[in-house]
Length: 249
Image 1 (cartoon, rainbow, N blue to C red):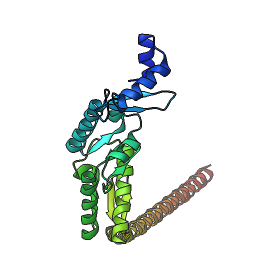
Image 2 (tube, rainbow, N blue to C red):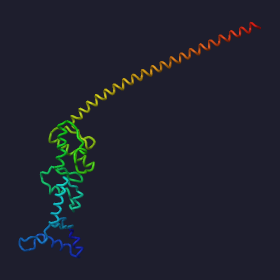
Image 3 (cartoon, rainbow, N blue to C red):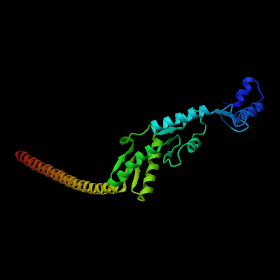
Image 4 (cartoon, helix red, strand yellow):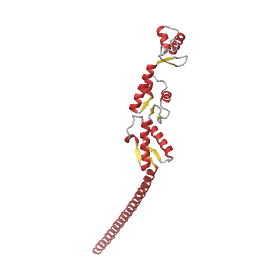
């Protein structure tokens, strides 16, 4: 609760409200008795905010519930619990040995990270590949955050195994270098075989084209010879008729 809002609501002096609130948080002035206002002040002198212990406990129980149920916490949900700085809050509240990963909009817990890194190690050992998004049951991350999470998990596995044998492909696929090498060898052989088939087909097509061209040339030559013979025969027949007419006259 903002002390400024309390001062404005009840028309009180802000400094006096701040002083009295501090006094009641510390105690009631009678030795070591419990404070009149169990809670904390934050925000400094300019914007003091009072948070009751019971609300802080409610915050923590809600966070713990989300953590245990989902394995990750979004910063938007923490802000709805009036936690203004989610990253700092989680850094203070989470165990020091927590092996989670901080993303731009959420914190991913150790259980989820371990699920991914275990799958990556199996991929590494079996010299295969895995589609993390399709094969693992993960929270509904955005595509960019999932890609970032996978990349960070790959870095963890590579560092721990001291073998840079994993590569991220198309954001969610992870392949071992050995598997990629096998694919390259198969692809190279396939390309060579295909190139050979295309070369043979091109040679056959060229031969067929040459044969067709030769046949067309031969046909053209035969047609030309036929025309010449026809023309020659017609010329001789005409000369004989002329001579006959002349002799008759």
